[in-house]
Length: 235
Image (cartoon, rainbow, N blue to C red; front, side, top):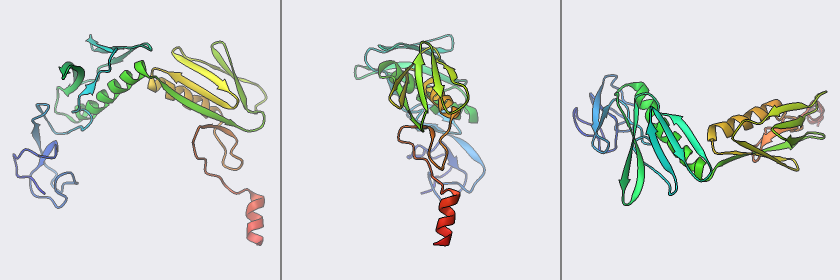
C-alpha cells in the first residue's frame, strides 16, 4: 500500500512518500524526496519515527524519576543512577491508570534527534530495571590452571602468563567467583557489560582447545588442529 502526499500513515511511518512505491508502507521507498509527517499519538512532526521512543516507559513501583538540569536521576531499592538527557530529547512524567510513565519526545525533526529518541527511552528502561532487579553477566574459565580470585577491590587472574593479572573492580560492581564461574553484577547495565567484556578480553577463548574466558552459554567455533586435518586428508 502506498500513501498519497499529505496522507496520515496508519502504520506509523514517519514520512510520506512523494510518489507511489513498489514496496509500499514500511518498505524501502524509491523516491528520494521525503516530507515530514505528523504523528497523532505523540504530536511529533519529523522525518524519522522510533517505535521504541514513541512508547511510554512505565515507572515501576518504588522507583522515583527526577528530571533536573539536563539529567535524569533514578532511585530504587538497589541504588541510584544518573544519566544525561540526550540532545534534542525531553522527558515528561505522566500518570495513566494510576501508574506513572515516562514519555520521551524530541524537540527537533532532524536525523540525530530521531536516532536519540529510541536510545533515550531504552536508557530509561534499563535504568528502571537496574535499580529494581539489577544486571548480571557470568564468565566461564576454561583451561588447566586458569582461575581467578576476588581479593578486596581487585580480581587476581591466573591465565597462563608468567605473572598474575590484577584487575581493579570499579565502584558499583560486585564480583563473585564460584569454581570456574565468575559473576559480575551491578545496577548499571553498561558498566556491567563493559567490565565483563574487559575481563574476557584478557584471554579470549581460542578455537582449537577452547581454552580461555567465555560468557556462560557462548558458543565458540572450533577448528581442527594440524594433526586432525592431516589424518582426515589421509583417510
